[in-house]
Image 1: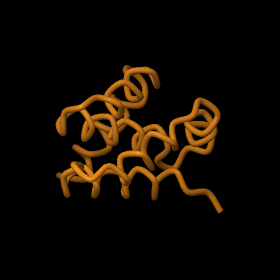
Image 2: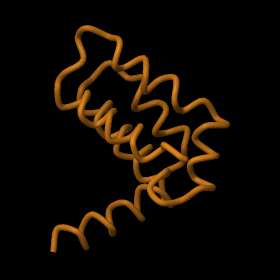
Image 3: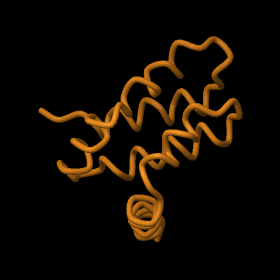
Image 4: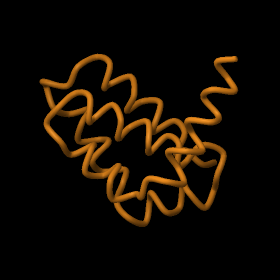
Length: 91
């Protein structure tokens, strides 16, 4: 059940919400927005090479790394950033 729900949510995030909105969420100052932005980036890059290229070409990796370097980042956001970066890894 959870896997099907995740697949549905992932498809919704990657198709209906544009990359720019994920970028805005990642660069916001709230934990909830950061978490949503990370989930969006993860949805864009999950098992989709074209989505991974799109995130890379539009500069989506730098704000994720920046979140890891900010001392005020919560552990929940750090975990979301790590999962997003893992879904963007190609190789």
